[in-house]
Length: 165
Ligand SMILES: Nc1ncnc2c1ncn2[C@@H]1O[C@H](COP(=O)(O)OP(=O)(O)O)[C@@H](O)[C@H]1O
Ligand SMILES: [Mg+2]
Image 1: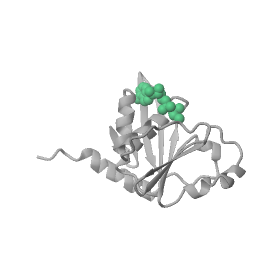
Image 2: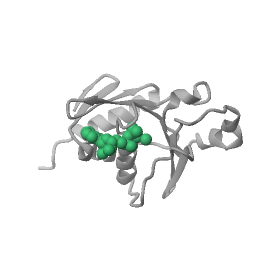
Image 3: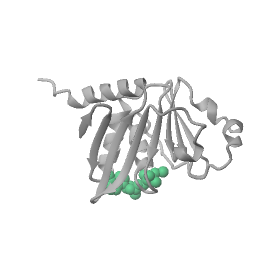
């Protein structure tokens, strides 16, 4: 793992590495965050979300919201909304389906295919991208807001904390 200013990068060798990174990211999340997940179909966006949910203590099934557009999870007092906007086509649906209200201070919103709802989404606190690389994936996370930078910094602390003596 490598971090520089407002960016964190890593090589994820296999699915287990993607899940483990997601679990690690979970520790840095705060209510109100919006996270964009970029990458082609099969890049590992949903796998990473599964890892994040595991890290938050969710033990149930995590399915891809390809047809429903969003899957809501309630974890103690935190809401996590996992969007997959690949099939999102009608901007009017944004209001009607109540998507706008899902972006609130008590919720973390993870958004696959955010470009499909351009202009409707809040500024992302983190933008994560996943790309095929060798046999695995190249991961990069960039903070886009002050909140995102703070959360990234506490992740760096988390990552570099030496084991207790
Ligand atoms: N780091 C990795 N290296 C290789 N394969 C991976 C890695 N992370 C996830 N995968 C695999 O790639 C696929 C990703 O699927 P999915 O998470 O649904 O992608 P997306 O949501 O981006 O379309 C899964 O089959 C998963 O097992
Ligand atoms: Mg997906």
